[in-house]
Length: 511
Image (tube, rainbow, N blue to C red; front, side, top):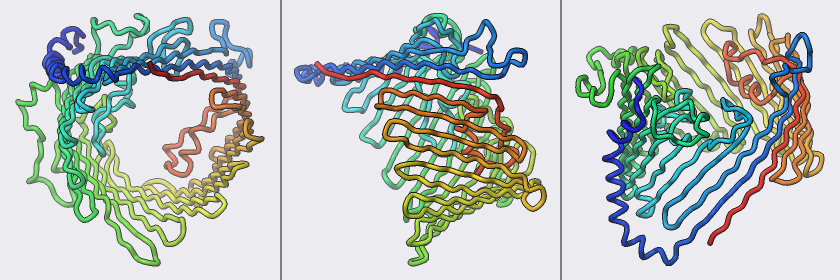
């Protein structure tokens, strides 16, 4: 079910807002004493970018787009912030034109994001009334229960984010928000009425630096697409003798926070667990992750060596649209590393074994990295997986003041098909303002692509780029030496010409 914004705020936010107002009222005498030294700080920025992107996609009329579309689009963004001492700020960002992942029209000017923030008692109480800002993140290290990167959140939220801190030992945070997709219909302004998906988060964390930390998290989602779901999570960290133990546990179920009383908080089954079947300890609604860091041996002239064991589990019924946890996973993993002295080198082996969505898998990744004087670096890796042929990759990096060259060559189906892929990227600095860039990409011995670019940057506030080619090289280089064969998608092949310019103005002042 989806919720009404007004009812959402009245029913859940009222106690929290009352508490905030009480703290502010208690702090009022101290604020009056500080008014004599108070000031207003303003910051502003104007960013204009223009883009002409022509490609050969239309088969009947190459290099010409349809009449309804245009290869040219521009975008103007205006940002402003006012900070009122001792602890209030107002921020807004308005923009026109298309944005990456956006869905509003080029002619519109909308408020893309903004907030009214407050910070009192020297940071003990702080928060913001926000609109489509990145506030959805918690402190879990292994299980990300709430994330700005999730497609469900994705810049749709507006509401209240609140944080309280007691002496650096106890921290409380709360989010009450509603998710809307029709923000462009109102010029981006928060409407505080209508319907949308609701996300609530409560987190309590205690810290005993540097020896331990513990946290408790509640996340509630009321959604038309996913239904009403609630997630309860706990996390714990302990440091002893230079070794860190991290463990995090979470559970999801249908309903809201009030429905947690009807079930066990975490449906664990200790009688069924075995050393070779840790997943039997958990139900299909559970998620669990644990990791041990700091297992290290110092071997004198031979350098240092270490081991990082880890385990992850997420049941098939664990539903987490607002986070980054993939359901149906049970994985045991160990990372062993050796850093020989006195060289700038690192050797590591990453091994994992488990089940993902009903399919067994075993993987092994070996890496060697060596850095030499003069900015030259060599990386080698080998990737093995059950049911797949071995893959090997080597990367050469030469980085200096005049140029940067990165070449990655990879062979899949090693010893049988020997399928070759490579990506070569180079940057040549033609003085301090102009750089020439090029890239060549061969995908699995059958697809050859190219990209050539010139970049002009006379100062930090101005950038001009012109490029021509058949692919964009920003993504593929990260995958060739790390991903398994089935995880590397074929590149999008399409000839294009691109011109891009960005101009920035900005400053700050006080009165």
